[in-house]
Image 1 (spheres, helix red, strand yellow):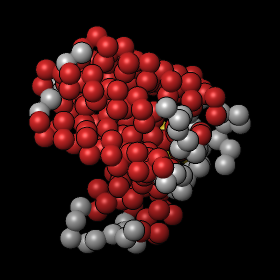
Image 2: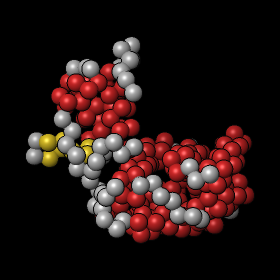
Image 3: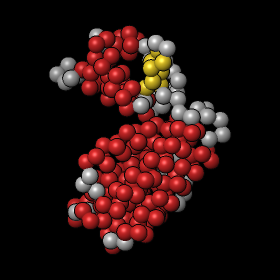
Image 4: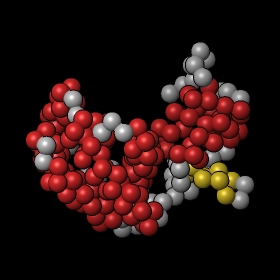
Length: 218
């Protein structure tokens, strides 16, 4: 990736650094040196400083004892984030049942088709994107702006945790559960949808915890 001069430099730097963190280019607890990043991207330190501030706000970078480092989640961090996600996404699907549009229903159908194909072809990176897309469609269908904003921070952290702690692995039944969630949502089965969403996310947490044998190994 490279900097395009016509666009906002700090936003470009933010996107490049964020992508690098989420794709595992930077290791958990690795120190981020402002001057080195600036030299790498060929820009001044000002935009880098602002990008780092934004990533600290996202929770992907931390600032301690004068040093900026890549976030290093603990097992308790993983549990805490998934607990929040469970409650918020249960609320999201309960609201989506009342507000989902025909276009969003079509998006869910297309997502499921693409997910089955990616799963059969063992495309792990593509599966991760489709998994997130599925949940995003439901979250957006809730039409609750505050809920969408709260889940944005959690979504980023969960993706990061999956990449750095379990290398993006998925439990085998998640594709079928997505199909069941979509069916319940379209059918308007609110209680069943809420219960399945909670079960789905708990299973996701169990999958992460099961795969953590040696934290942050590669």
